[in-house]
Length: 374
Image (cartoon, rainbow, N blue to C red; front, side, top):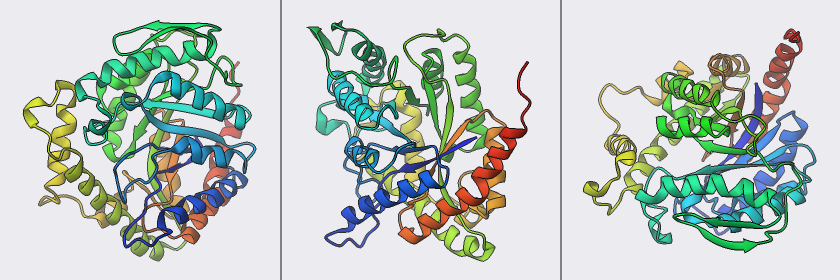
């Protein structure tokens, strides 16, 4: 089990003139410390028009700054929103980031689960699957072919020498968000790494992991899409004092869950329900249910935290149990959102230290005891 960081750049209100900048500057301090503490990767999401939840619309620029402050930790974008970008542009920026970081970049691709951040760019929900598929086909070819051309449904490119090329060979590993059965199947069949969100809960993650793993067996080996790892993205807060977990940990879980409801209330605004594409209906129904909550009988934030199945919030021992539960499903990496909304910089640094002193060494020791095959 490898451990990494995950950032949304969450900026809770009330805001000051420097609220956004402060959160970004704090991340620039937190990531080098996480590298010292044994974290192996850091991932930044891409979201647009999502105030409070994610002020992180240009993750590659933040990662470029981090690349100059670190030397070992891998740098991931989770995920590039394929329907609002052109593959040539993304290929150039990711190759440049790979050069700046001396070959430490991972690239995640996704569609987005709702229309709110697509429509200002002129993209339509009905086109996202096809655009994502062409993206996954084009990027490896752009990075590995001396002269590239493409004649697709959504993207057409005459023969061109696309530069620069990334340092990694054959190219940076590709990943995909896996929020639906079909995406998990496609991701596995293409040999890409799978990114799973813990909000779905362990039963659903286990189901998606099974689909992904089964499809992975059909993926071509030695091809142009290195990846083939499964990672969990979750919110994380760790403290050695159970009383702090009971109070502050519950407050952070409460904030996170309420912001998920606020997201659901926003992202389908002014969208005609009768035009929701079939492969988005499950997302639409999920968000409508979430937006109308909390519902009678739903677990409270306290109960969610105490159950220890959805978020990695607890003492070091509780966090280890959470991670081992998902490790048993086949999850190989976990990316921790430690900078949860209201969490102060000092609290984030404390969580990073708890992982570095207690949790990461636990899994390193387990790995050292594992028998060597053959």
